[in-house]
Image 1 (cartoon, rainbow, N blue to C red):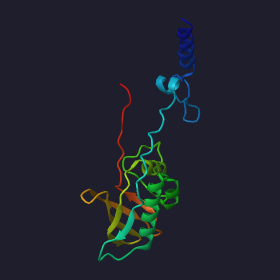
Image 2: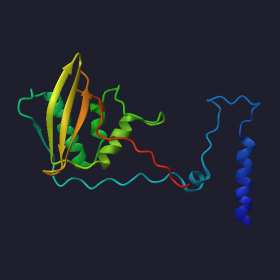
Image 3: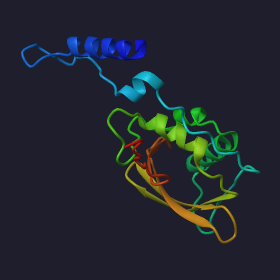
Image 4: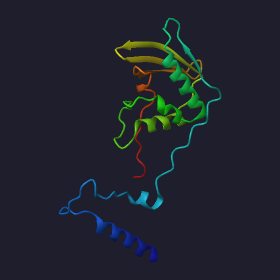
Length: 179
């Protein structure tokens, strides 16, 4: 009985402080209302990190491709970050203009990139298959080899300073919790 009274009090207090249509609710003074599950149980814990790869990926450039020192350095740092399961060192290698497709407006691209490093599988070999230069931008096709039969080719775009602008390395999946 006491629990019901407490919930009634919380609900009544929340409703009483909600802005009405007549009030001037601006973004500066608007209240942030969360769902009851988050209110009582808090935010869910972040998904666990994937286990680290057994070995640090070997970085190579395919035969016939003009080596690009900045892209190779990025890939070496990327492989080391995956091996350590720590994406924070990669943040300095992302351009200020770095974007992720379909990223919600309340999320930061660098933070999501760092979280992805904690969870994506580690390749055994990373091969720079091609580098196309256009103005101040470079687009690289990069093959991630996991086993002899399992590989994926991904696209990376870099700015003139060798910082990552965009990649199709991972996609965001939206999950709905509860229903």
